[in-house]
Length: 382
Image 1 (spheres, rainbow, N blue to C red):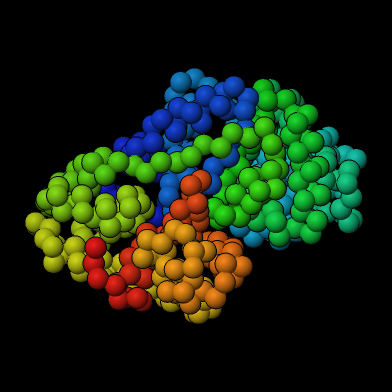
Image 2 (image 1 turned 90 degrees about the horizontal axis):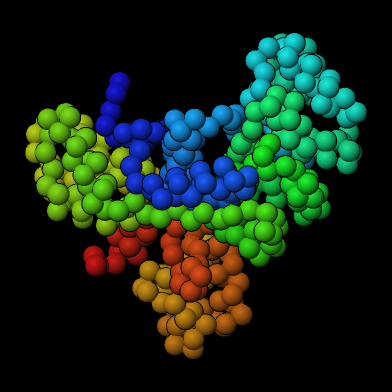
């Protein structure tokens, strides 16, 4: 069933709003043979942004293939390389014979094989006949460039949830090899979009450990303007014969920090709660329903925190910035400045907070922040 408020999949076209400047920046970088880095919290629109960018590029006449490598379940080099190779091969071929020909020609000196039995049983394009060696790794990392040269069509390789590369044994050594391959790869044949939703883990790879230095271009994703979101929601309600006051909708945008995923889900709930005018009571009921969906996840997050970590989180919500000051340490019982550093690192590793370039703390999930304020700490509304 068609709906004006799509939150369960990436969107393009009229359902995609905002971030036009980011679309232009990414398209220009890729067109110039550059690699792109995107990292934002989950459900902030990275995939929609990328899909709309590719859609615009195709409309303008650009010819290319895309290969998306899902890295959510990657826990080893073998996992990653087989996922990489499978995605790239499938982007260029559609039949078992074509798969076998590509593996036989482009990976002939490796331990990667096309196994018809594995393909028939598990739809596996690639299998390993022996343990990985360095030649296997390098050859597979080079595969996108080899295939692009062979087919004459540029490949954009999307490495989704790239932070999971750190689960690989000796991942730093692995990335150094990856760097050398990327450095020698021709930008007119293949470019990579490194994408991740674990903000602090991605910062660790690309900013603290400085992998792929000067090889990738970070594109920050801005909030969609509240006015544009409001217009989008008002139009959506009008298609189903419903009306919402724009000022009310602007307050909803503020509550969700303009997170379009939460707002679309919230609006979809509202759409099913009334047949006419959307009131304050409707909005509150929809918010309660949305909270009930996500509360088990929020409770699990908090149950995993120590008392000190919870205290630092409360200090963050109270607007504290200088956590190591004697006043803050005393007020929130944080023990010492050394302990504060450990607590900040722990909350960042759990992807609960992050820090801006000005070292200001930010709770990554806006609905989680609201739940913390209202239901966990029972703070007064701002």
